[in-house]
Figure 1: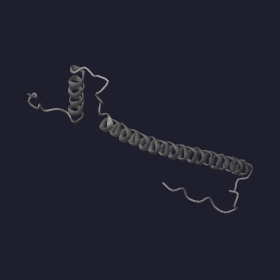
Figure 2: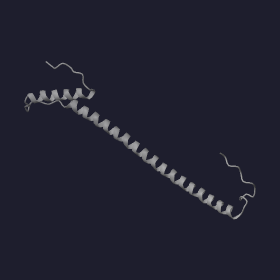
Figure 3: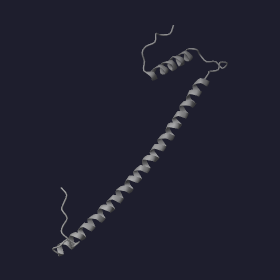
Figure 4: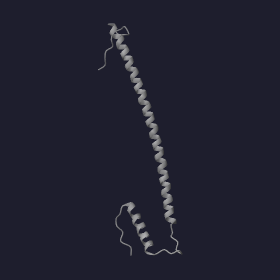
Length: 115
């Protein structure tokens, strides 16, 4: 008589079924005439293998996408550095020109600063 069902986690139930099946198989000695039915198990293994292949493919795709994003971010950072460098150079040139004369470089009054 099988034991009464217990409340189990979803993955735990199959493990106990497999354990009880293998225990039943080991109780009876196998003879050369008996054939063990592995067809159901091999189908599950093939299905599991297909799922693992699918997961691997998806993970590879995600990894490639992340690599592309990282390359784009690095490219953007380099562009921002170059832009910032050129702004600093331009500001330093304008400051040098402004120190030599009392008037601003455009010749008119200084614009008001925003607060």
